[in-house]
Image 1: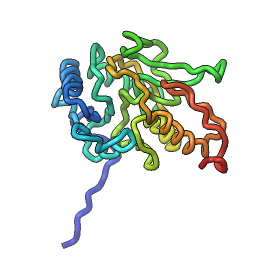
Image 2: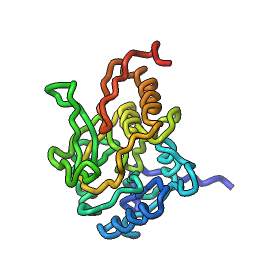
Image 3: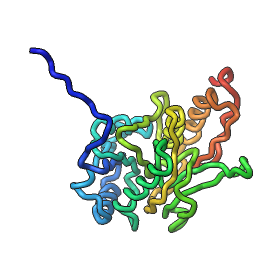
Length: 249
């Protein structure tokens, strides 16, 4: 019998708008996330919820869990968020509207989030944080000048189109700088990153653990090869990439 091919169409006809993916270690925090998404319009009819399970130990890290989730996602948009985020005002309709606006403004967008960094055009030595968030640093921070193209995004809440995936590096590991890495990978693919106006609460304590400096150095060693001398603006501070290919060890 002659095999019958399946012809793939270049459009997304999914019945689900969102795949909401979380890296879960604390069940109570994740239950709070699920309850808040349910209150603000994310239902089984328009969204699915998928969890990378770290409850019994770290099977996944920041650089690996996105890759694990992609093949399981069915939504038109894929959300990757921390287990400790909580919706407090903006909901399903707001996010759909923000993403549709972004699509109209710049079809080349590949990654969007609620908090990011860029540089001020009048002075490249200054970091401009663009966000709308409530967190340990204050309630209802930011909210103006969005959407805004950014250099890097914070990892607490990220959105991509399922049919235009961006994956993290395979040669890095850990729980820091994977948002910046994702934005750089989007650059390599010819796309852009944006901060959008989607206000939520992030309950994270913004603690830099002992691995933070090590992963930052890993990030520097990798990307100075392609961007020698570049100053990278992140929500955790600026990162100087330094020299070029031959002094990257």
